[in-house]
Image (cartoon, rainbow, N blue to C red; front, side, top):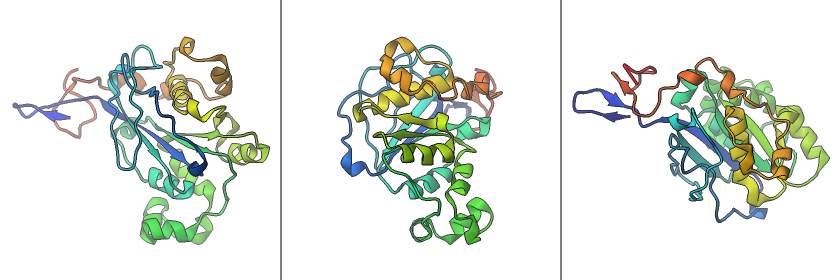
Length: 254
């Protein structure tokens, strides 16, 4: 939001958070080129650097058409313990959540997780009070991965991008978040392209002609159009909308 001279506010575009955690990333190489979150017609998405993030500038875009022009995208790629990062993301707030829409959270890895949460790591990172505030109870019986995922799913579309072929890894994550949300990452160099296609399909705005058959096949089971089913999906205020107050959800006009 930018304040005008008359005291009203102009929208710069609603921020859409896209978060990626590279668990076990010491064995993975980050792609050096090719961002699929910038450029026309993704005018609503302004790619912003956050703390400890990597950006891959490129003119390429894998999205087409309205309503993508209304968003700014904040792309963050973190290297951290997956449980710590999941908790951090679950506690993240964004204005778009207030419209009933969700951000996108990708976990990239090649191993199973653990059903029990690492209490020491979480308390060390966030404190016991944070868990109580998040889940309403500090009872250690609630310290299981399913509790954390349930909290995450309130505001995030979660996907596990699997590196490698291990069936046990696929089954563990599939049972946790749904097999339709476990996507095989054939090449790590395709990471951002795969993420872009998943987002485009979930939003119902992807141009499939821009993707290879192998990549399209890898995401063939994801819940297509899920975000588009949200009642406010078509009502998101576009960039340039005028608001009376900075925190208002709906504009005066625009």
